[in-house]
Amino acid sequence: MDLKQEPPLDSQEEMQRADKQLTIKQLSEQLQQLSDRLTHLEQRTSRLEAPQLMYKRPMSETHEKISETLDYLHNSVEELINGITTD
Image 1 (cartoon, rainbow, N blue to C red):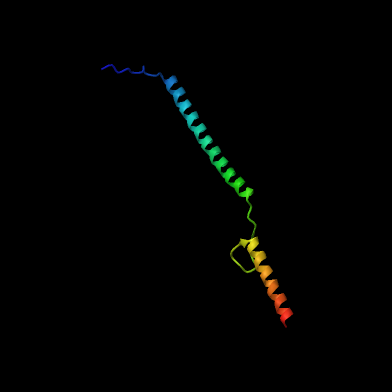
Image 2 (cartoon, helix red, strand yellow):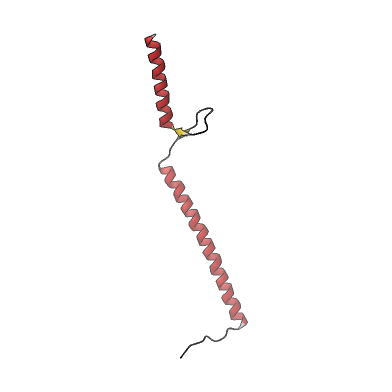
């Protein structure tokens, strides 16, 4: 069998190879961090494209859409007006 072996590396070559591997690892980690940041920014941007205004009523613990609040207020005002006109 012909197995080609690389010649043994001297200590300087080993240090250079280790430095290169460390640099590659650091660059890879930085690239991953930048990729994560980009993904996060894309998610935030997409939420800004379709904003959803929310309102929390006094004494409430949950938020509701502004449209739901406006519907509630409209119906409440109608009930008040109808109550006043029928009396």
